[in-house]
Length: 118
Image (cartoon, rainbow, N blue to C red; front, side):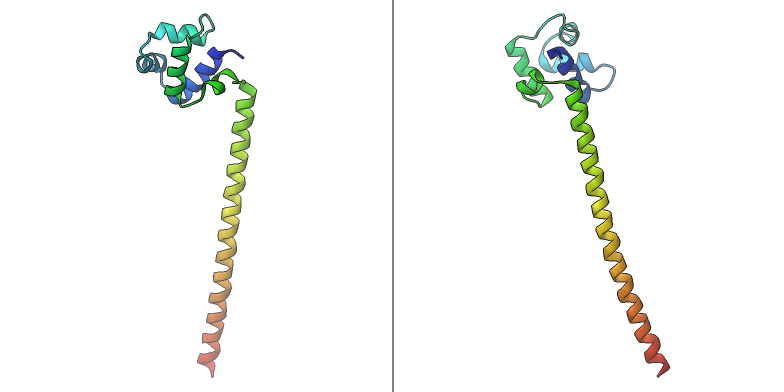
């Protein structure tokens, strides 16, 4: 996977709207055409610009260099799976807590009913 694909992927995450390339270019102090050329693999950014890109996108140069589209999607899927698992555990804990509260309330209710009969 090229550096251009990585730049485009990370840029689209932070600048998703239509004018994303132009806005990103303005942040970097380059033209939109320059960003377009990088993303399409027609040019490679200088090390100076690569540092600016990494800083603006809040990623490391290594993340840009080592970007592989499949890896990113796999990481996202793993993150989603972990999120849903954690959410399920949290809800299960809440359900158990509520079940305990219901048992306690039922026991109190029974105690009151017995007290009113006697």
